Image (cartoon, rainbow, N blue to C red; front, side, top):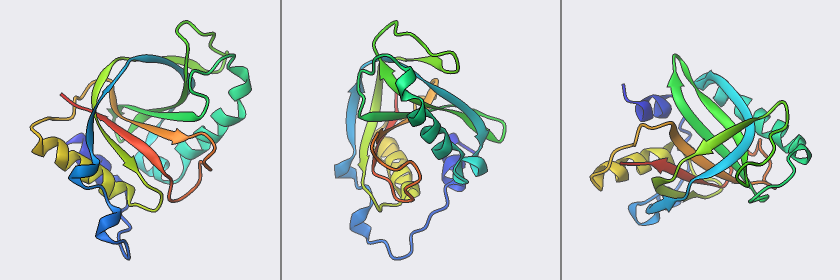
Length: 179
């Protein structure tokens, strides 16, 4: 089973009552050249069930509580969700913020080096199905002749910092590295 198929299986699709025009369409997905950057944040390793139960959202809240420990943020309005390396029964995830190169790392946090990446990019809107947005993005990637890059990061999510981490219908940007 491919990585995105596993993710789709573990994202419960709650499609009842959602209009077709509220989902990602091919015209909404664009190619994006993301520059590399450094980030500082907190690491989580767990299961898809744990992620679904809110463990990543709890991690995001913890990072927000500790933001004052990070001396300088490059993009203070953006909370990064960096998903990496699928491991047995789960994956690694970092809740992080972009920082200037060489910025100090608070003792309980880690530095994450994010390389420049070519990505499929989609602005997921509040109320849309997250599972369908990802499914539609992977279908678009395949249709365009690309494939998920399979590098260190499987996908990157950019959340508005002011958004409630536990909002069941969040708005955020989805970036899937491609090759």
